[in-house]
Length: 176
Image (cartoon, rainbow, N blue to C red; front, side):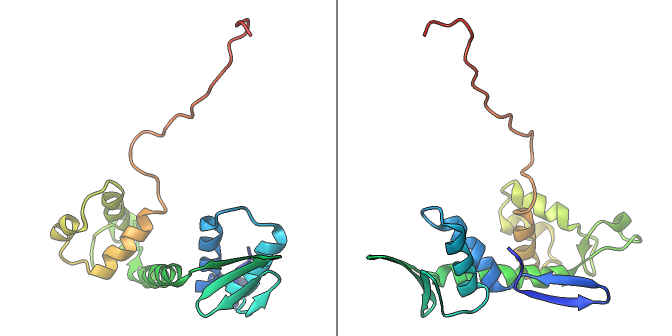
């Protein structure tokens, strides 16, 4: 999917995902059955490009309606939209709040005005440490800082050894 918003910054083209772009991905991951390429494109036109209708898809208030023949499915999007808006606001705010400078912790990203590494706070969230406990250890961080660190933690790997894939092999010469 190509982001619906882009702008030029000198010679570079910067892409920015809109709330509609993120909502599109969220609906795709939560949808109960696989969609055809055409249905995905139509869904993107409705959610990310702002069309009221496209092919089988249409908007009904904040919700989506999928029609195919006699079948009609309503996809309630209010909670999706609220989650996406909250996470995008936290992400955009956090991107401005976190800075990196070679003079502070060797360039590791930290919260502006502190020496608290973003990666450290995110790793605490990944380990399941309650926010209240983290807040006691880092009183200089705000609730918005924690919201960004919690979101950032979802981008990284969980701590510990990587899981080995389960491989099932059939023994040769076994009775069949």
